[in-house]
Length: 558
Image (cartoon, rainbow, N blue to C red; front, top):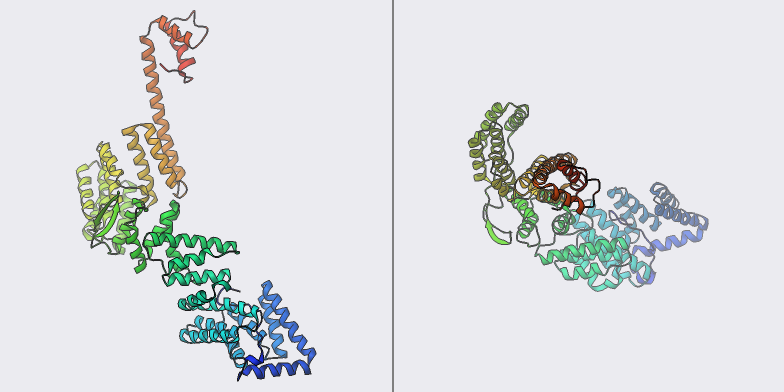
């Protein structure tokens, strides 16, 4: 049994000649006397105990609990039933009551390994750490005292000891057990040992332990994945976080960073969100390591850099590998949010823009600018509002202010929109290529950036290049971006209209070309394509025949 330090018990019998000055001697004598004097009652106790075991195995905790209580109602000193009731109360989360049963067992047998292990875990759950450690050390000493009497019991209790030390986070003790007894450890004990060894920074040995896990397929797969993660961290000189079997936080940290290297687009976005919402020492330290890795994409590094700037970690220059060039970058913290009053005003101003009340919106945005001069989004909104009014100089002035504060992606996107508005498509394209659309946080900005990139590419480089670019963006976002279909429909309409224009232009070109040809030249073309029925046609009839049977069918190659 795993979970919150709850164990099954195989046997807990000992030989008198191994126990000196122990309350167990009196306990065993009383049990023997009861068995002789009341064999029928003893059989009832044993049957209740066995029934309880079966029901617990089946998951019927309530009936199991009743059976063990029935056993104890007949003979209150029956240790196996007491141990199992401790197990059940532990499963139910009632650690205080569970520990009371542990104490009852220890009064009867102060070296009962199973009870001592359980007691250590229950005390830990009750946040009585020092007492828990004392129980744990007594459990280990008791195990060593009684080892050799029953090999099956020895094996079972050894695994329980590893679990106990794992729950208590006593990594050094687990490492000692692993060093001395690794050949006797089960798959789950090897896994727990590997975590402890990793926490002690002996990563090579941790990898060996993880790769030695066999038999349990699910655990073996999990161990392989963990080994790959640790190995990558070693290669990138990133400190492996503390890993505990009973807690998820270390694994969350590990996976957040690991998936930035090997994850799909959605997983990378989730990892960025995790790093952004956790600004502890390990996350900051790891983020700075990621900035210099040649295996992390530039758009991820920019997002990580932005996260670090938000918490003031880039006021002093940090080293970043961007575009294959190692460079020192420092960023001044900017305002990320507005107070409640300004937030409401910002929301109302954006509603004014949607309603077409641009001048009112500009007045409100200006008020916010004066109140929060480093809040970049307000300059972007001012620039967009001035573009609607065709006041291009005012739009550019606000964008220049935003660039001085922080050349973040929303500013570059707004600047590219400005250059389109003033018909400077190459400059717009230059701004669009300065960032990856995955750096944008809002869905609406991503939609706008993809559409703008596609339109500008179409204008500068033609339909085929525009289609190639859109396909690349589709691969990044189709599965993760909300309302992708609406964007797809807009782009399809754009491409269709462009294809229609091209087709019309081509038809005009073919007409002009055929009109220049003499009749015998037209006849020669018809003959070349083995088209019949031309002999009585005049020049205009021949032209229509060529267009219908050759050009419209895509056979024209002149």
